[in-house]
Image 1 (cartoon, rainbow, N blue to C red):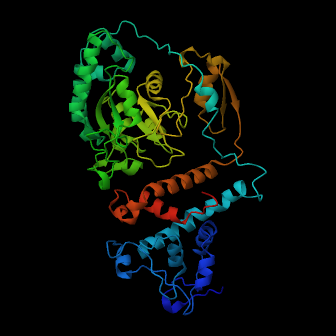
Image 2 (image 1 turned 45 degrees about the horizontal axis):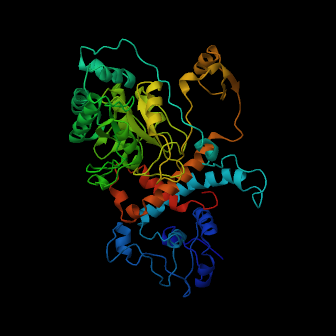
Length: 507
């Protein structure tokens, strides 16, 4: 097939494709790769009556990026010579995109997709048949699930703070750990209703400053706090989270309250769903006081209400989509919070805001009722004051979720009885050596090692996986052009458009 440039047409990309060839080329995985590579060409076609028109059925609306009942993003089949780029979008059933977005995707494919495809092809496709040198990046979520699920779960031996007294100021109370607050409650030095009131006041006062709170669940909070106090009065103690207030990242559904996903498109959304992690915390006696900021559609710290701040310096931002949980825990607006991570959204904001957080092993915490970016990557985990509190919360939320096929009933051995001198920990040459030296001084066996792959390679594959899975969840959103109202146009809008040109061979 001959392709060539036509300078009189302003350098547009054209290529003749007979109808029969089109039908034969509908083997999508190979086409997507070819289409991605063709985006580099500068070629146009001559006219032929057998060529298909891959433009929108309403080119004026398409160019404006508007869809509706008369223009639902359906491509026409009129005979006409066309740009290769538009031919590709027809094959991908993506003619709802306007020309500016097509060109943007072309640039993203050239700058981002193709280099990653070429670099990772050596890892996963160097030998036909896939029988030799299996990729080190292949992940099996089962991880000895059958063995672990049948091991008995023993009660953890939590440290017991001694001589805990209620501070004179509510501010000091707000920065106590979960176990310390629990001691106050068990000793009748404070009630759950009083404790809930302290955190509700702080949420109302500092939440707007930090732009970290979406919804304060005051009515529900006082109801749950009263129930916790009543149980304690009856001598019934549910565990270390009994009567402790907390917050949820606003991708986690709670009935009768909005679950906005941080997005203008969904800011009025109310889901009649009880997320599994919320059920677990409710059964542990914890008290939900607020839905906390998630970056829009769980991307970074920008949401429909602003941009979440770092409490240590409000001129800076929290980073990561679990922005609200990190910021609120750091500022003492909640004793702990639940966030999520697909790629760094627990670890980054925790580090920036100076709190302790735990990203559990994939499958350790059920995700029913939680907005998904990528089922193969998403994880839920706690933001707390210290690592002991993280253990307390993880112990409450872990376990098999009957509606999340990837979740597992994991064994959780008591971390407080571990002899760290019997641990072996590996570290890379660019690791924080101060941490390495501290662990060595405690008797941990520290072993240097090198990766058999590059971090950039892994990150590229992770980005591909995340973007493709995210697009599968938000195809309708994109086809309705709601991405045009997204809060940060250089984030999901660009990535999800670019995801339509990712090779199926790699993804």
